[in-house]
Image (cartoon, rainbow, N blue to C red; front, side, top):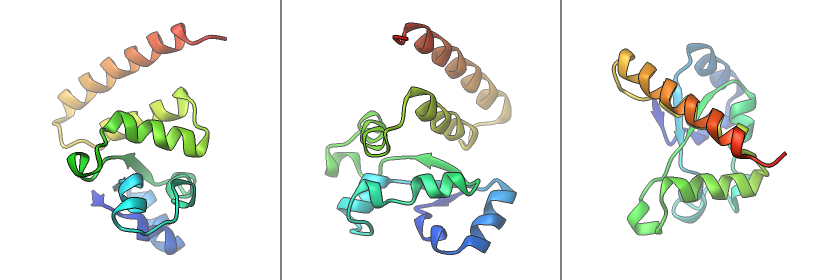
Length: 127
């Protein structure tokens, strides 16, 4: 995997190669704005452009203690910035599971469990 790989968004050819190879890219959107000053706001972050280019992108936190930020809050901020719903956030989470360093059987079990959670969440969502 490539950690903090947002610079890849500046190179379409490299993005295509990494997308084809299904190499996970971890991004820490809030950190990229607050700590790295790489982007002016979350809306300026290339997260969705990277995803649209076919990259396997995972949403992460960089330094939760320093930023008073946990993964749930990072997802909430991303959802708000991009107007993403539970379905889209669930896809990011599933790709995070697919990108873990768990062995294959543990990864499959975790994915199955989380997919079940998503089904239950969908059932509880207002129509």
